[in-house]
Length: 239
Image (cartoon, helix red, strand yellow):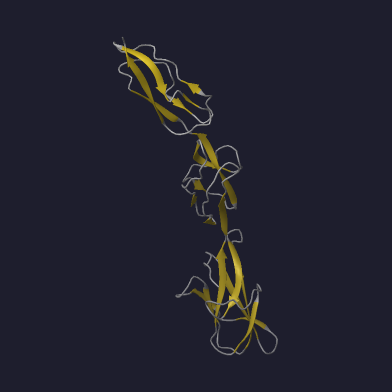
């Protein structure tokens, strides 16, 4: 067993004497030196001792149980009874609540990102890793597939609840570089996206002296294309 010890927790011990009367014992609680659980020390009185706790912040912590070892829970009852005949060390185990952050690629993405764990009341830094999608760049996180951007990559998540996040996509814009212009000018586009209509390059609006424009290589960029492109102007010597 493992866990962290909540602030402000109180552990009480009650001794039931042999004549049936209930009295408070000299039980005290101190933080363990060899872990994050609580040691509870009982007085040297033979008889039945009942331990209980109070003031637990149940929004943040879960009570896991009691044990006479710092590594084993022997009872999960809220009240723990045992017969004491000598000094007895009892551990109370608590676990701070955690929440799972799940990353899914959605219908159009690919790849995988490991889930994360957020501790109650502690801000969590979301993953900066990205899923991939042809023609798109992931620029954030959404709480629904195809939904609006809710969190930045590497943003802060503060809610104390599980969450599933999906990539928020932005159209990738690619550049078109024109080569071998020889000083000529043209009106063809400088960028395109995967959704652009097929671009068929038009002839330059001016030409260098002594040359006639022949064609562009390539002559077009089909819709659905991706990646930066270099288009070369081909010339023939004027006769």
